[in-house]
Image 1 (tube, helix red, strand yellow):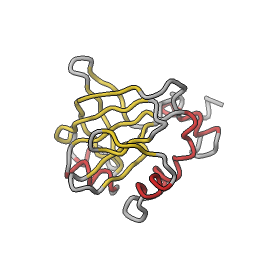
Image 2: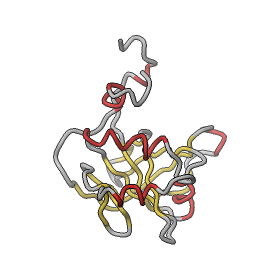
Image 3: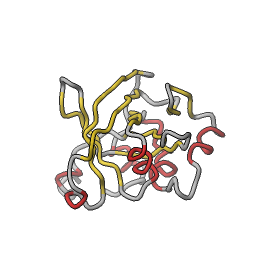
Length: 166
């Protein structure tokens, strides 16, 4: 089966969510798989945020956000957080109604996430033309907290649940 996959889809990457706000109380959450640590000292990540999203608007207006490592049991959030737009639906109201979030610092975070990492997005790493569908940020890690033990949500789990293609 792995020979059918494109080389970049053969790696079983973790699935994260971004919790963001625009600095004025307008919160949103989004799924992100294009996130990777790239530096040990200082600890930094590169994060690719899909263009046209409320999350990208929030990060552009307020350069801090929380990267949340999702647990394997949170696969059912992918349709809401990743396949629906924060421009059309209030994702925070959905999550609050189901008691799935808690407050951490100035953010709402998913209560069952394995870990949370507060990030500061530095100026855009590449010009907009370098990545046609994602805006790429170099991010400093400001603070982190491990919340739970358990297995992380991965792309392979999303494939097994038929939430993404091979």
